[in-house]
Length: 482
Ligand code: NAD
Image 1: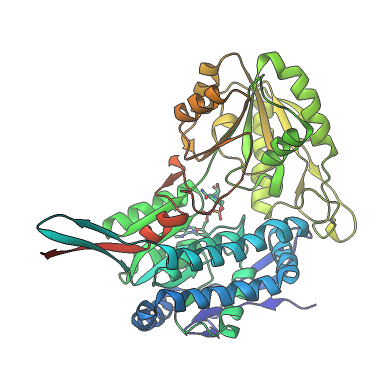
Image 2 (image 1 turned 180 degrees about the vertical axis):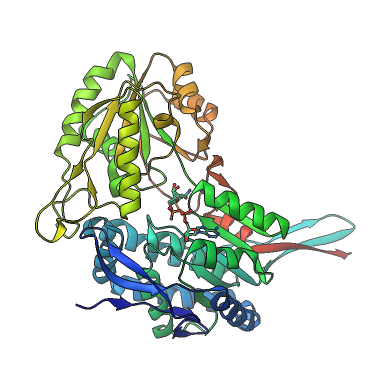
């Protein structure tokens, strides 16, 4: 099969971009180029913003139920292609097809359906006294920008565009240049489903070119971003100078805290293992620091390592594979560099620590063995900085206070999981740790109505449920004298 050429979606057309240059898109499992995506320029962003601006009044004027129908149609189209999109997502990102089939694509469908329904159920606000009736209008912002990362490509792309569109905005979206494929496929589906031209525009390309042009564009009223803390900081400063609304979902260095009183059934242990290695550890919510109470440390370690040892790294097409390839060669090099640094910092590699060489079509892929390291001080770089790969450190603790101090000992504050049978302790610790999301005896159990996001260097603002609809609308108070 030849190299597949992707195109931008602008004004309802899949269009060639202004400069005509392309970026290589790699299949991580083989290390080979299989597609190319537009290396778009500011001119393409300009065309997309103009199309979005033209489409905005009619889209905003549609009754909520009509906008919801469009989103439902798109959800149905994605769902009807579940297997195909799962294979495509896997080819683009390196994740196992079985993960894309069970998590990524179903969640993209759920995102579209959830916000289609949420907008029709969102109650209005009013404040009434003897003098006046105050109504709060929630009006769409106009044209908004959505910038998404490579780790959960269609999942996070739809997590942003669905609430933006449901709330009545038109969108210019920029998927990651590393994993652009399913956003391209979704672009095709919007045409097939009859989404009005200009309502959703997708511009592919590099962050510093397309992403930045989008953030700086005077007609883009708000930017919803998910990606690294470093990029988030640059977007925050560019947006601040223009008084733009921004929502930032950024990096994490999440703890999983296991108390000696936890129910460590096989099923719970499986979840703890999954929380470290799902999607090759490339999920912002993965628990990469595993804090374990001293009295149970050795026993826990033995059982945990047995399970990690059983994880299979393999061709993402193979349903027997638990972990596929890392997303890119630079990311593979970064993760291998982090493992080397952990050793220099005095860490002992208990399992893994190496690249995995597969044979056949995956011989040149970017595979890393699930890696568990112990013996590192809690304030070393390995325990403070995000690695975003299949690397977990084991850290013993003696008391609840110490567990809280270690958990809070990074600049990040996205998600934590607590494992305990003591409900009072669960409440206490959940209140004391600085994270936007705390899971107790579970991990990545998501209810789309809940506020999602991090504190400290992990995030600004919240997505999900009404928080997302609030972000994508402007409140206006109308005071009517009685
Ligand atoms: P990244 O910051 O490199 O890129 C994210 C997106 O921003 C891409 O589309 C990229 O092209 C764009 N971009 C890059 N520079 C830009 C600029 N100057 N202006 C505007 N846009 C720009 O992140 P990544 O490597 O794609 O994703 C991995 C990171 O995302 C990890 O740190 C991970 O923790 C984080 N993440 C966070 C969440 C969350 O919900 N908090 C979810 C998933 C991933």
